[in-house]
Length: 492
Ligand code: UDP
Image (tube, rainbow, N blue to C red):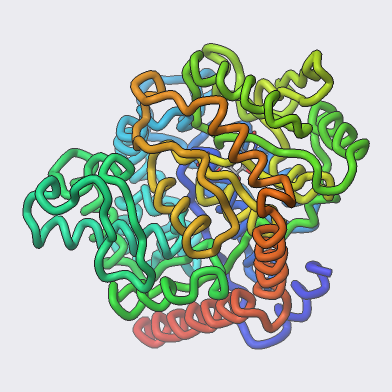
């Protein structure tokens, strides 16, 4: 019982730490950050989430769910410097499309650096855990002498690959001359092959994006360390590479989603309808299809997915996001769930309770865009994947899933990019073939399933008492105690 643990830890080795968590307002960042806050709260810390005022609905929903699972997390709203706006009327800043990342990053710094510093001054937390994409928070924390930890919204492996690609590109000066069509990324523990078109588009270039990433890296070095939502057994060689070769100080504390008992999570009635539908299906027969909070497909691609899923013939749940303006809705209660006329599948226009779906016994495979959280949730649930990366670090995550962990099959996406209309369409035949490989014993699904189940077991062991992630949380809490002692001695 988390609450019991909470109390016994409080009496044990650590003073009560007050930890501030500042997520980037985007689904893939808020969700794991609230879960991370729950992990620390369950281990005796006082956890507070910072958010621009007004807080996004998703954050309010996640905090409610955390409380429902017994984790008491406080919310501290940062009021932006007065600009004549009436706070109640403002839209909460929230990232629903990758195209607006930079605007949001800039906007947050401009509006919330000062309120953050006031909050740190007033409350003097033991530490600030802030998102990797909020590099300016390192400066604020340093000014107020509060240790800052970076919250990594991705795992060790993609960081290692990006670092290797960038290093090699810098050595070779021209990415185009050495990369060819296929590249074995040099200097990594495994042979990882990527197509040139699958690398992030700023690879080896000086762009606005790469400059921002330089700033992220610099602020990482200026911080006390990093918190990573991963576990040692998942990517041991890369956890080592990250620390030893890349010289980073990191604590792995994941999978943070396992802090909840997904079966017990109360959701909206739309969410309950999906789970009831799953209850009626035999074990491991349903394919779950979702491209994260920002993945959007072109009309042509939507048609191919519909046809591909029908041709594969397995029951499915496909989360398409909302229509038009509403594409980004991240509220279960506004979702529309439609049963296909064929009776084969459910289409969810909006938001689905993903972790609960992946944890349902009826789900046997996941067609995923390979966002880090989705990968971690699938791994935690022991569900094998058909991989369909779109942008960000997703193609590197695909390589981890398919080539290193061997718990996935590629659907066949070849081009990194944020504009789906500009990409080649993945044909229905490829989609149907990947789903067949994922789900059918005669197409080799058994071994993959076995490995995925084994990885799921290791994930649960990692977060259980004495496990690798559990111990890292202990070590991090001791480190905070040491820092606190150091600070109080300096003040004497
Ligand atoms: N998610 C969800 N329901 C949806 C779509 C996404 O619960 O309909 C959650 C998913 O479980 C994960 C997060 O949103 O925790 C998406 O993060 P990820 O890193 O996979 O992808 P991103 O959205 O950042 O591209």
